[in-house]
Image (cartoon, rainbow, N blue to C red; front, side):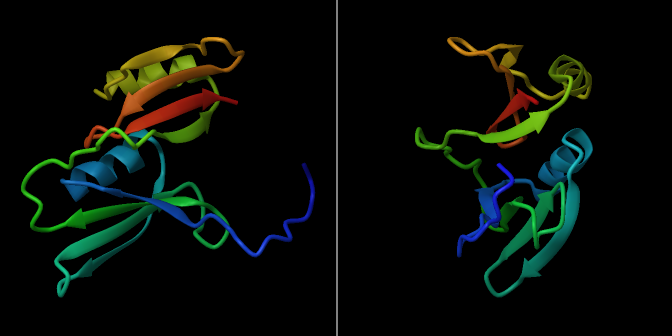
Length: 135
């Protein structure tokens, strides 16, 4: 897997819409230990973009949190959204820590059905599912 990347494409970010930007930034930064990379208000469009991630945008895929200022109701996530996935070490310890921080864990850490991976699912403040996969 040490092949040189010769593709003309690179994954930049995944965008999710959030109702309460401060609450979402706090979740991704404090609970999931990401860094707030940048945050920009767009008054003409009445929205704010915040980018969070584990590394610099120039070489790491990040998450774009989009906050529309006039969004009064929570977003309907529909039935097409799957999840974001994060690789972790010590998934049981991470889940204990997240649970103590008040993070909802709808699928506790444990072996994946019909597989060998150990996974868990948590929810962010807007209800987006995040899969934790032990590495």
